Image: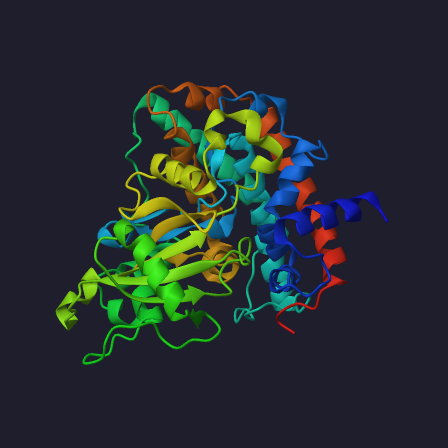
Length: 441
């Protein structure tokens, strides 16, 4: 067996508890395209870095450590309301901290750039028929590979410029991205998020609450009957969850379901949804209701290889995620905690009413994407990622100054590495696709 294939089997099996080719739903998702393969194999990424199959430029490795997303890619950024479902400020920022930890900022920079290239490839292959995607792309125009390469540069330039602005104090750690111009590729997505927040015109039809809960007047609030998403829990489990988690929410628990089939990287991790609200709910009180997710949390992907980088990484998995989210966001969720239950660590977090995530076709297809929108998206992500990294240590500008001192040659070396690793993921996907039947088929 070739060494690369043996490594893939060992790492994927360790994380997912199933051998590739066994038909695991997560693996079938990953088999739809290299982009989906990247999303589901963050542990392979860190195995490759730790074993020097690929290595960050030495200058970036010398930057001060910071808190990182860990699973940084184009779809782990998006719009949401600050403070979970309690706030009314819609911002664009990183939205996934399941694999966050203390580590090298270069990990996020490398992984994000790879995702840019594979995002373009995903859309190109979906439109041409090379990939059988879960949801077919209904657009005919897609960016060229050259534009994806240009986006790599736009990404790191925005990241570096944001560090420069922080050092010069033209922006501070409270800065966020919002109110995009009408011509921006993110404008329509921001408007979609704004309409979904409490009080918005789409709150009762398209918010996270409305998509999951029966909001018909005159009926008790309860989760919808959606077998592919929700599974009823037995009475004993219901009462146990109610007793254990009620102290961590801000109102009554009105209903509980098990959430199935969510995510890509963590699709096999058990999770439950709690419907939270006043004991007696009228139509006027619906804005007070929200969904809280409790999710079994495993160790962040980098930590199997890099646990000893920082003592902070020795925290329990859920506690580390909570700490990172609180540090890296301007105004983190008000419902955000960690609980030890059933000999496992569980993350408690609010589901944002207005959450709008980014799919590849949102930024790589259509007229706006071809008119520079893909590069604009990369720039926006570069800016908010720099802010998230820099917020780890708000006492000094040591991190930002190290980024600014990095020569152009290092950034260009990063681009080359991003392209090399994207090619490796495509090769890995080819192997997996020959073992698994993609879920779209």
